[in-house]
Length: 73
Image 1 (cartoon, rainbow, N blue to C red):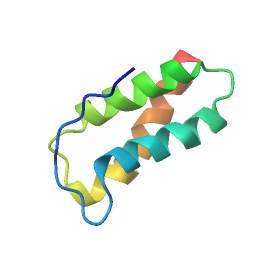
Image 2 (cartoon, rainbow, N blue to C red):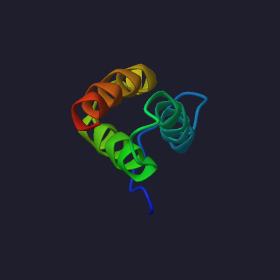
Image 3 (spheres, helix red, strand yellow):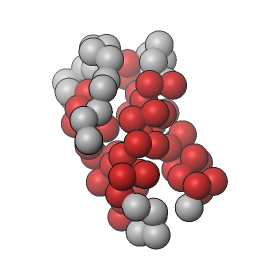
């Protein structure tokens, strides 16, 4: 599966790193969720957060994705 991400600038941290770190952490936090669901959820959250301040993206993603995963798993 390939994640399609926008190229918004993030200070000092590549966007792909933010997404990968979120997937890794959430896959551990939600072991009953299939990794594909975690990856898809994080990617969708990232797209939904497009337009948010770049510096806030990691925190916003870390808040939104777990909320959605709780509903799914």
